[in-house]
Length: 227
Image (tube, rainbow, N blue to C red; front, top):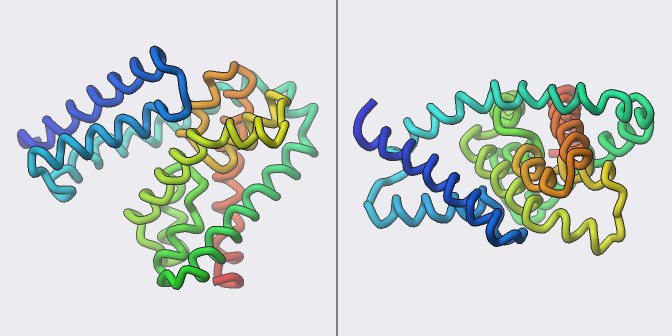
């Protein structure tokens, strides 16, 4: 591990810790830790003339940890198992509807904007967590790096504006709010909605996990039909 890689890892961790402190002191969708820490990292790297290729090894070290972190989300699923069983039909209906709508809207909007098929494929996986998005993008001919960028953008947008949109839409049920955020904004949205309560966080974890499973199963045969 060279000096730039070590510096990049330390910078990323420090920026996120600082963003977490800011988020607690100034609670607001605009102080979402992922958004503020990302902006801080980009600013520092730009000022120090460190390009993305130099930052990539540090990113790969940290991306490796996304796998275990995603598996760890099984704990909230287990804790919410009674609610999951009780609302199973409505949950699955919402998950399938949300996942299909996300895929269709991403691909159709990409086509309307004249984006290439590679970018369309990358956009199709934007609502699932990065480890799943990378593999799903490869299956349908998308660029994994661009897919991750779409995933980050979807997560940040959902974390910042998702709770506000749900409030404006008068969706107040804690489980419904969490499930909606998790379905379209994966881990980043889940981290934000957990601030509303444990039930919202558990529901968001369910949405995040199940949306990833549904996307992985249906995308390989659905995408060729709509691209």
